[in-house]
Image (cartoon, rainbow, N blue to C red; front, top):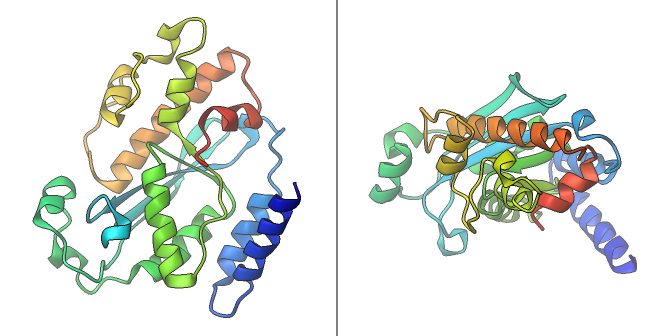
Length: 239
């Protein structure tokens, strides 16, 4: 508890440094006052996805796009959405263009990641973020924030893949539309829930699919009387 309090103060001190936009301090204040005992249905989430130049931020790969969708009262809120491309400040490998179809011409002249992330986290506020295999998105977001502002994100992060694996241990595994497997692909999970994927490897399209999966998951959990945010966090939070 003492160590956690010390880390919290040290992080808050970083946020108050000159040059760190106020939006990140506000996100921190909202995230640290989160009531984990509240019902899942009364919690605000933002479902996110990113596209990148590759898989390794520590080797020079960077963000190309970020998307977010609001999720309130157990439903996807399409009136709350965010999607922006950004200038990577480096070349875009041909092999990554094949995946996400974001060409250098499309990205030229766009704002850098620092500008986009200020707007993105202003959109997210202190909401819990949700992604699929979201440790990937977290690594890239934190790497960009460290590079631009010397901070990491304050928002808590859920992973629909971790939630799917946790749901396998429930008494009737057919209710989670999952097979027992360590790697839970977005395509497989969407297919098992009957969710179409017309815009695969587009940040907004993948965020929408993830949001629909999360909607199904929370609905199934509600039927199993798993209603509190703290229980959902214990199943799927990325540390």
